[in-house]
Length: 202
Image: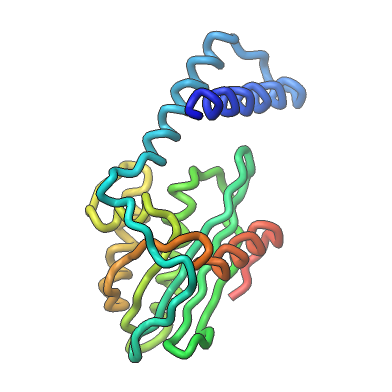
């Protein structure tokens, strides 16, 4: 399976390099392209490898928070080679009523991990607008959950994660928890809408 993933990754890398040449860029050295492809594949693997202790299976359906709490779901939509991402976030109360939501397009090229971090920050900023919030945060990005829970510091994502930590304190969050994709359906649809609409809807 890993060999197949590597072949797909290198094919995508070659396709990107070919597009550069088609659109007026310089033809790259094949050995350099291969080395860069292997290196970027290794980075992708590192970002998506989750330690066993964090592979906790979350609920596969949406569950309401306890009375007096609100629940925030976040998600990001990323396409390889795209110049923007879509993010989605939605806040429910214990009755399932939507108190706030955002579907937004963010310009730039981001890794899936960084995109999920941005989605988490945006969702927390929406939650901050609600007064007297005690928040439960859920996402299907288990690598984000493990990073926030472990207080890991990563160079590229450091400033965004610092914002996330401060916002978690401000909204009196109980923590960030992992759920299955099926339990995060609304945030997923909002992220896809944000990606496709290329605008911000709050």
